[in-house]
Image (tube, rainbow, N blue to C red):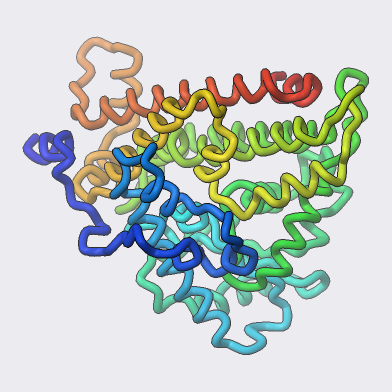
Length: 404
């Protein structure tokens, strides 16, 4: 209980303690290598925005700022390690970082989730895939990070032609890892090798998604992307609902918290970006500038989910945005604390469900867990209000295909 009381008073162990979040650094010094390739004086980053804008003073020295700079340091090292290997491998198109580090929210307990994209025609077997992933990790294993999950989509290698295969359109039987990696490229990832190639591939994926909707009820070329985004989030939620395996660093409850925290933010940020791009480039009489929509949406992909939310949050709802960022920062700092992480990981899923259902005899939860659940519900309501406002301002057909 003493540990819980300390957590409640915010006197917890900060894994970034001792690291410096220098608010006077120039934007370019706080940008990961990929962002530096096309940064301009007007380019924003979350760390600089939070530290220099008086509107966000109450989260000025936030966990998010420290996580941003920590992520930048790790990503800089990763890029240097890969670039030190001339011709890393002729089959490698790009290496992409996803998850916490892809969002610039990495920390001590974050897996270094990366995946490899190979050139077309260079992969002949699953062994080829394993060999490429192992080759890249061999260069990166000196980093002070947790290795990527040895199972799942980050062990697979894809190619541009597979990601943009016309046979995959509307095909629910198409390889799940291809679907997952395609969505990762749009939600919360950035390259650490092969910058130009990856940027072009993201543009190609956006154009692949901007298909005629073949519907008598709407005229939005973004309908397919919005529908696939809903499928992605729903699939992820269903998968984690009954995934009860536990490790020293992960558990059922931890995954549920992350789902409602960072993953919901990533999902919502892409949805809002899509709706804004479609709305901005749809003229009178529903005239659609397809190329402009694709270009506008592609440009958004260099930003993190939180940056996209900040850019598109309704101008007259900035207090709600500040409220959301404050709570997002709070949850991120809590689940980074080693003592609280252990409380979350040790929590039995049955106990959680029994309390939620109000069963007699259910044990009393740790107060900090109640705070987390209540905070996440409040954050979900804020995101819902933001999406609702965006739909109201969007063109009718785009809003309709998101609402259904």
